[in-house]
Amino acid sequence: MNQRPVIIDTDPGIDDALAIAIALFAEELDVRLITTVAGNVSLENVTGNALRLLRFFEKEVPVAKGAAQPLIAEFVDASNVHGKTGMEGYDFPEPDMSLLLEEHAVNAMRRVIMESPEPITLVTIAALTNIALLFAMYPEVKRNIREIVMMGGSASRGNKGVMSEFNVGTDPEAAQVVFQSGVPIVMAGLDVGLKALVLPEDSEEIKNMGKTGDMAWHLFRRYRGGSFQTGLKMYDSCAIAYLLCPELFTVEETYVEVELRGSLTAGCTVVDLKNYLHKTPNAKVCTDIDGEKFRVWFRQALAKCI
Ligand code: RIB
Ligand code: CA
Image 1 (cartoon, rainbow, N blue to C red):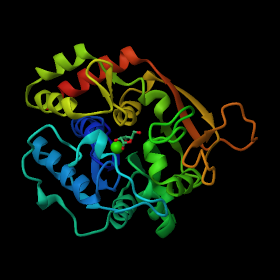
Image 2 (spheres, rainbow, N blue to C red):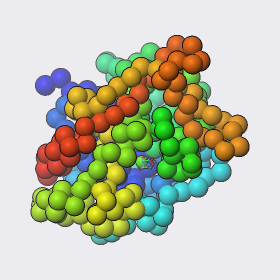
Image 3 (tube, rainbow, N blue to C red):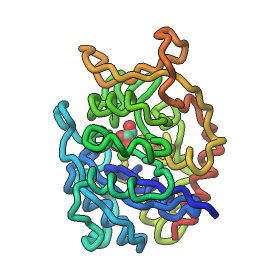
Image 4 (cartoon, helix red, strand yellow):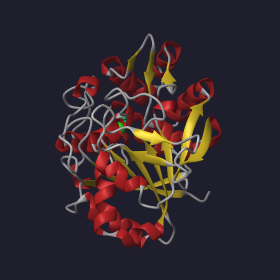
């Protein structure tokens, strides 16, 4: 099988953890590098969590630390959702520090992208600070990036603020740099993330899926992105699902811009589905997802993580 080379930029994070697991065990993907950025919790914690996950899954993927805070915005974490450590609820093994590169994430991404004989897909499931820095420092990388598949933004309401989704709202300026970069973008925002749910019957099935299922179930108990009863929101898995099972999604090409100055709307993605602005589309926006088929896909994908 011709694997798609990817770099995952992440802030684990309980939903990140499941998305990373699925990506690591997907035969369609070749995870060349994992880069970390402050978001759900601090840079130190998200980096340690990425290394813990790699030890848990016995996968040897290099990890590089990135930005410890947003470009301009004040850093506000989501430890209320993911716990103080960012992956509370399960007693993970010690992080595999041998996988941690000395390089900054931006330099590691540039090296991996420019060395690759085929274009790299950037899978971003966190704030876009590292990606904005990458484009500012090394714009030449754009010619060897196939696309950015991001979990971020929303064509409707927010989950960090009234109108702002957490990844875009954490670093709106970085998100604007990325949306205006000219690199092909797929935006899997809250319009699909809020419907990508693990329901109670799924949790029960997952609980009995061996070591990985036991780990996931323990994380789910602590995760506050929804609940066992109402459904646990697997936001970040939407980005991986788009790569592995794009037919789950309804997608519309449109123009997206990030509001930076609104007193009530700063950090929101303005998704111009009706083309009021008459601007050239810069993103494929996932406007809907088949929630039932997502549940089946998610359980099947997680069952492969052994
Ligand atoms: O809005 C959801 C996003 O914010 C996810 O990436 C989640 O992990 C948090 O980072
Ligand atoms: Ca995340």
